[in-house]
Length: 259
Image 1 (spheres, rainbow, N blue to C red):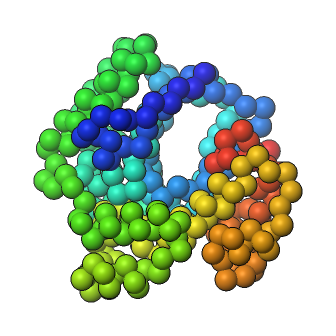
Image 2 (image 1 turned 90 degrees about the vertical axis):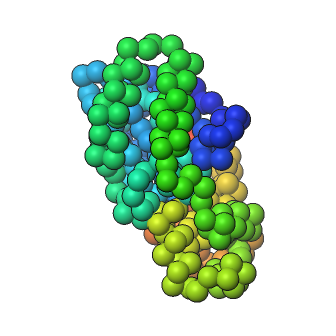
């Protein structure tokens, strides 16, 4: 059973997209390929005998997860750039990596896990996570992203990767070098990679519940120069071809069957 909870209340709505919980997640296939979103995720195991807590940095490529055993987790999906105030280090240092939360938050992360294991009710678990993040936020040196970074995130998101990074940099007043470094520190990816990923995420959105696709038309509709560029980017982010994605996708458009 899986629960999703959108965060509506300030101040966390500025930083967190949603909380989620899954208990007894099991699949007939051995593994799943999870596509990148450009977001940082906190994932905590709810199995006291199987500690698998991770802070997953912003990713530019797909990862494999084991689905050969029953899984129970609770997690936080941060908005793009939203994890930065909670980390205490540049988000770019976690790009395409996973870290044990205790490395970032020490004994506080161990206490969080213990409290979650002691609390069976999903709503109470979500509140525990909220309080944990609020405490981190209150300790943050600078809880708000740089205005230039937030402007870039908003512009890239609104255009789904169609706006050039050069034009964004020009409007921020930053030098290109300073903008790239600041963006990567706060978001976890270089701005051009983040923009390409936004365009890829647009493609995934277009593929929901479709069975056949004219790939050339889709490439043009989503702003690709031509079909070869589209296929190259798709393979880079998904790890499979577009046609293989259609065959392997699960009920979640972001997960592909493996094995």
